[in-house]
Amino acid sequence: MKHCNINSLKGLWIIVFSLIIIPLHAQEHTNNRAKWFTDARFGMFIHWGIYSGAEGVWKGEQIRHDNDYAEWIFYRNSIEKEEYLSLLDRINWNEVNPEEWVILAKKAGMKYITLTAKHHDGFALWDSKVSDYDIADQTKDKRDIVAELASACRKHGIKLGLYYSHWVDWAHPYGWNHSREIYPLTDEQYDEYWQQKVIPQMRELLTNYGKIDLIWFDMWIHHSESIITKDQLVQLKSLIRELQPQCLVNSRLGLSIEEDSDVDFRTLGDNQLGEDKLEYPWQSPGTVAHSWGYHRNESQWKSTTSLLKALIGNVSLNGNYMLNIGPRANGDVPYEISQRLLDIGQWLKINGEAIYGSGAFDLPKDQHDWGHMTYRVTDNHTHRLFLHVYNWPLSNRLPVTGINTEPKKVYLLSDKQKAPLPFSHNQVFTEIMLPHLHPDNLASVVVMEFDSKPDITSDLVAENTDGGFSLTPGNTISEEGDFKKTSKQKYGTIPSHLEISGTYKTLWKVFIDKPGKYSLDVSYSYQANESGGAICIKAGKNVIKQTFSPTGLTVGEPNENWHIEKFMSPETGTVKFTEPGIYEISVRIESDNEPIHFQYIWMEKQ
Ligand code: JFZ
Image (cartoon, rainbow, N blue to C red; front, side):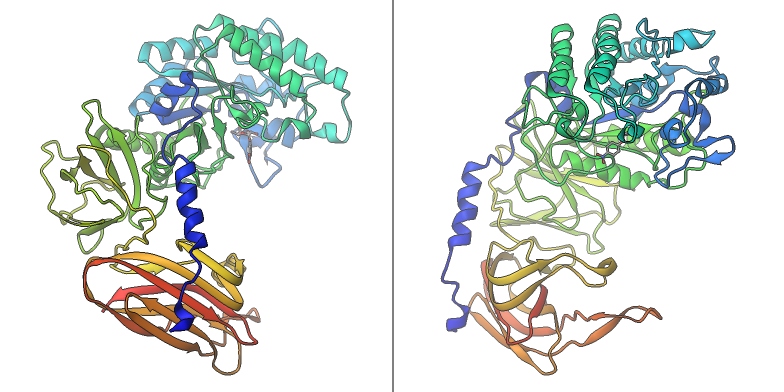
């Protein structure tokens, strides 16, 4: 018994304390001008330019890089600047109509558009007086794509953003070009590019096209690692503030929000989805397949469901998602893209309330295995918690852990009548009875409605859809002792786990809704020749003590002479919970000479 005492609650106090000082929900550092952006949540990115005519192929050769971003063909295949212009002949100007992109965005439920006004190839899609490497100087039609898009956006009530490659410019003799790592540029030369192209072109874009809602810069390293100076970046940002004070600026300007809070939102890496709630607005740029610009040999199409989950997941962490289209040289949007966008638009028509103007709820992210939650307070002060159920439970019951307040009502967001769904509520646990059929093929949304902000208990391990509990090092309340965290190895054949040499103590809390007998299975690997070490589990009034049996090895991959330690999850014992309620489950593991590789505990009702 002595072994089971958790005598230090230090870890617990650290958690309690951090809950007090870290505001959980509010995005404290949101500039006023960014309010529309955090409401909008979903935007369209457009990569279209000369490269769209190449379609990822130059002189019969596919782009020279496995990361085949078609818009990089100029650089990757070392194309001459003048010869590259020949691709303009492939653009079918009669068919190109930016309004169609705007209409597609509208149908997809997207609220803003960001067009590559100038990508790394340095070619301007507007009539630029600053450079002759622009659409007006190089085509007979002299179209101004920025102007056309701007007026279509205004017509359809879509916010307008412009992508401007400020750092990289392959067309200007002194713009940054990665081959400058071999053939260097002087700071003076770079500043000539900056003062003669970047600043005056940005002035054109911010002066001649009405209101610009955001500028999307694209430098993915910090300015200190680049040729750009902080002064140049500040000069650029000041120009924006002078000409369009309401225009948003993203962190790929090369300045982080931490460094300069006047930067409005953080841009994550390409296709990088959110992992944490942030204190300021943020966005993931995403592709439907791999390339941004149109690539004729594209093959990695993501499913509509995974794109939608990316959007929901980001919103559940207060983030945005800007999904890219790479139209062809005649303006056509590939079917694989438009179809997915239209399907997402249909979903948003029904479920948009759970996305636009909605955001994170205070429970831990990924706490529930069935999906994600978003949250909003309506104009008439109703509090709505949206449960985005990705996988409709076979049992037709949805366990929700951690909400203390009993909901006033539960219903499906897709149900216009808002017919109530039956549910039971017990202390911190709600069990919702779902209809047999899921209402939506992509993600079904269940609404829990409250009169005031629901109280929560945020330190519980949630019951999963199978009715069990995964007690892992990731959802523990406290842990201490002699252990090393190991992430998954060898393609995940060895799962992430703790390597315990000495003593390890940890603690979880669960809510038991259905009293009775529960089994506890411990997943571990132990490489000694005979049993050893010890585990002691205390759950409510029950105590389980066990030693570890050797688990031996397994084959990681057949015929590759690849042998790895085997993780097994035998039943270690059973416990009895007599009453519904919150229970602490404390565990102490001790190793002998050989370390214990501990993965997690699975607890399930018998
Ligand atoms: C950049 C561009 O090079 C690319 O062509 C496209 O426009 C994309 C949206 O942005 O590519 C990047 C930028 C950042 C990272 C990777 C590729 N990053 O942070 O990992």
